[in-house]
Length: 320
Ligand SMILES: Nc1ncnc2c1ncn2[C@@H]1O[C@H](COP(=O)(O)OP(=O)(O)O)[C@@H](O)[C@H]1O
Ligand SMILES: [Mg+2]
Image 1: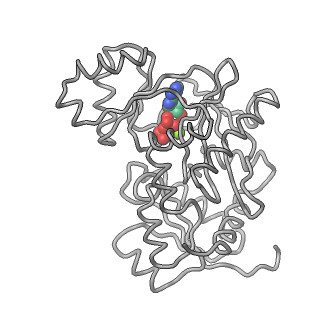
Image 2: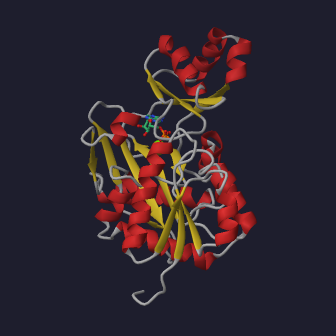
Image 3: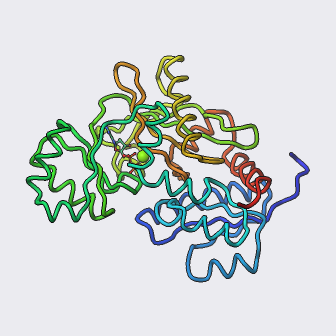
C-alpha cells in the first residue's frame, strides 16, 4: 500500500515485568521498523502517565511490545479496550488465557494437539503439605527427567531442567519466585521448533519454522539473549511434511486460544515426529536475537513492513 497514509502509533515497551529489558529491546526494534515505513511513532513506558496520555492523544493504534505481566496477561489490553483504542495482538481475554500455561495446555490439548503431561503445584501447597510428600505424589505420576517452570512467565526465567528428585525442591523454589503456581512437566527430548504466526489481513499464516539448538543444551535466558550461544536454523531442518504438521499444530493452537494478529507457538518435536505444545506467546520476542524476526527474514519479508501491516490490520479490526 504505497499511498496509505502514515499512522500515529504508540509503541509500548519496558514496564515492571521480569522481562523489562527484553521488552525495551523489542520495542525499539518495532518503533524503528514502523518509523522506517514512514509512520509517526511514539515509544512509551507503561507508567502512571500512560493511560491519561493515551486518552488525550488518541493514537490510531497502540503497538504493545510488552512481555510478561501486564503486557501479556491481558490487563493492559483490557484497559486499551476500555479506552476504545485499537491495538496489535490478542484481545485481553485470549491474552490472559494463553499467559497461564496450564490453562493454555488444557485448551490446546482439547483441540487435539499433544502437550507434555504435567502437574501444577502451588507455593502454599508445597509449604503446607511438605516438600517431600508433594514430591512423592508428583513422581508417582511423572518420571524424571522433568521440566519445572512458573505457570506464567517468559524468557525461560525460573525454568529448570531436572534430572533427579534431589534437584526438584530447588527448582520449585526458583519457579515460585516468578509465580505462585509452578508446573512440573514431562521433559520431551527432541528438536525445539517455534511457529511464528502472523495475520496481516488474509488470515493467520505460519512463517518458516525456526529451529533452536542451544550450544549448552539448555535454551536458558542467557542462551536467548547473548549472540552466539544458540544456533538457529530457519527454516527448521525438518522433513517437509513434518514441518507442515508442526506449522498446522501452531496454527491450531493460535486459533483455539483465540489469538489474533501475531503469536509464536513453541514446540518440541520428538523422534516419532509428534510436535508437543509447550506454550503460546502473545507478544513474542522481537529483539535482534529473537525468533519471530528471523522467521520474517526467512519468509523474504521486512520486519518493519510486517509490523506496519499488523498496525493497519489492528486499526481495521477496531476496538472490542
Ligand atoms: N516439557 C519440556 N520438555 C523439554 N524442554 C522444555 C519443556 N518445557 C520447557 N522446555 C525448555 O524450556 C524453555 C522455556 O520453556 P517455555 O515453556 O517455552 O517457557 P518460556 O515462557 O519461559 O519461554 C523452552 O524453550 C525449552 O527449551
Ligand atoms: Mg517459550
